[in-house]
Image (cartoon, rainbow, N blue to C red; front, side, top):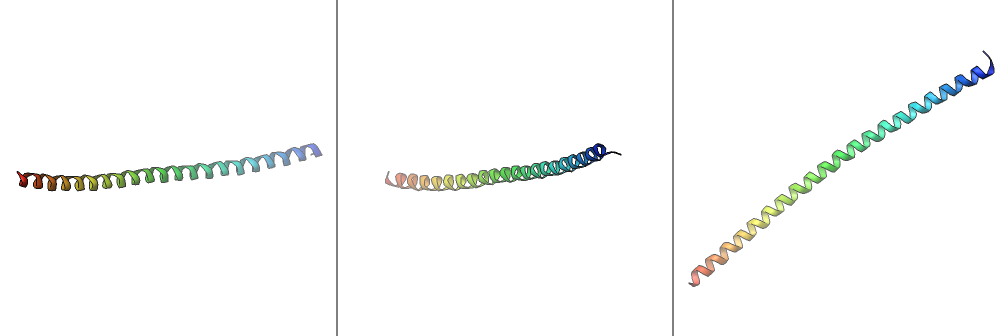
Length: 77
């Protein structure tokens, strides 16, 4: 084995290590993005639920006020 073969083997080992490290970095980033995506979807769903609850409360308040006004109006007749 001469020097150039030894250098080539080292280069291949370095490349293999670099590829393994880069691959792991990519996998970790993809996992993180996936978790963020799930967190985002959960946050959107929670906001929709809160909005629906708030909308229902407003509708109930509106209906109650409308009923009071109708009763007052009907009493005046």
